[in-house]
Image (cartoon, rainbow, N blue to C red; front, side):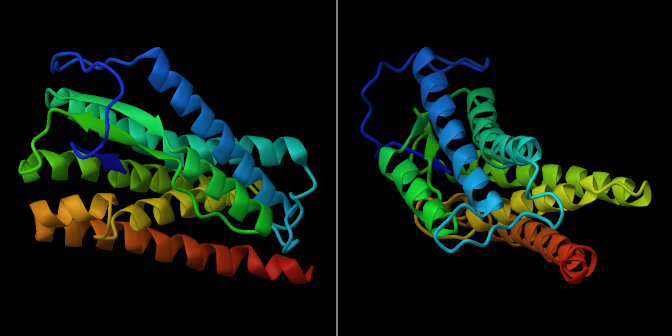
Length: 236
């Protein structure tokens, strides 16, 4: 997700530039959001929730180190890489962009994960200097996040196939990582509210349709693979 000029700034914006920059404030916000989201994923994967049913593939839920690593990777690729893609594209286009965490969104993520599912809006990349009427640049900046997710989904899916052929149980987790990225990319392309899809849709409906079809197919493929290769193990 990314926000525009309606956001209330409380920091000084440097002149627009085309090189990638950051600040101590951005790193603190990004680090806090990453830590919270990793914790939320860990809670849900492990099943330590009120609902008591995690999403850990059979045979791996008891390995805490594995759970921590997978949760951290899911948050890193699904969330951090997504937001940094927005930032990089915006700054390459000549605008100032930094991530800012949402306290309310992080609290909501923690609350829902304790229940047994995750509804996360940990924050967004704030873009300064881009006109609200500049649909093309907004669309390109917004599209970068979901496309990064689908790229990671493809990498994890390919790795899961290789791991499966080698007989490694790691393939289950790689499929989970592929699904998380595919779903996160698809969700963010919904054309509503502050989601990326609204800006992409406003810029170019054909591009939006192609993008959400691509991420949707990725979701379908990963869900089907999880159902075929992981679900049967539940009865073992």
